[in-house]
Image (cartoon, rainbow, N blue to C red; front, side):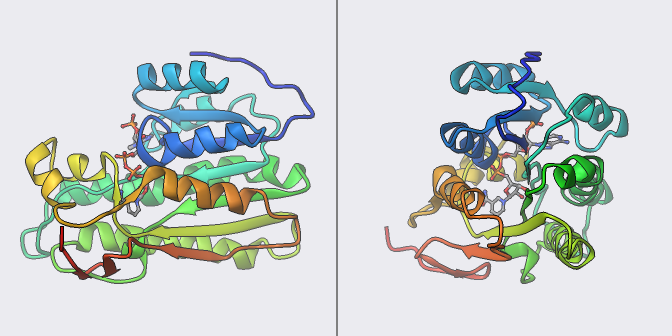
Length: 251
Ligand SMILES: NC(=O)c1ccc[n+]([C@@H]2O[C@H](COP(=O)([O-])OP(=O)(O)OC[C@H]3O[C@@H](n4cnc5c(N)ncnc54)[C@H](OP(=O)(O)O)[C@@H]3O)[C@@H](O)[C@H]2O)c1
């Protein structure tokens, strides 16, 4: 893994789940804004090529594994921005037919993953004098939908974890922003449907979803506000989607 150390006067942004989708786009955006970006995920080949493209530091990271998180955070003395992005969904089952392994995956990755990284990097974020924690939840953190309880419950929990920090850290130099997107075309649905490309494509049939770049641009805006401005929660959806349960397919 590349272990490039940034110059001490350059702001450092850590992005989890940067091997695809929103995380990779966010890493590109923050690097273009002048941050030294530290990117983490399990697919290190992808991280290495992104790191070469944008001049980032790539480190292997499994947010569900304590030892991996400790190794990832080791030596990160300066951290100005943490983007808790690693996450996703598995399956679309009713509660009656819930798969416990899928639920465990979703809770470990979205909820405990966010907890592990945030807890480990809070001291460095505070020491930066103007820390920022951006957590990518979802509109699934704000509403329930049929067959989605494993994901919606995990995203609700992740959202509450993040929002609790807004209170607990009041008075400290750390800002907190929750980004709650609707449909974004990434590898999200491919992961949810276990690699079934046809099922994944059908999710976006006939409508125009957000792109990873659309979300990254908003994160770039958040990260470029002055220290006294805290954007607490940003919900962004495609025009064709009014809620997790209601969209229009005209295309
Ligand atoms: N796409 C949407 O419609 C949508 C909407 C709302 C919210 N979100 C949220 O946005 C975030 C990013 O998702 P995406 O849409 O960009 O999907 P994606 O393309 O599937 O990206 C997910 C990223 O998370 C990483 N990841 C998964 N498990 C991990 C683990 N155990 N340790 C470290 N990294 C892990 C993946 O990397 P590796 O597999 O290489 O580890 C990948 O880089 C997620 O939190 C998702 O819930 C997505």
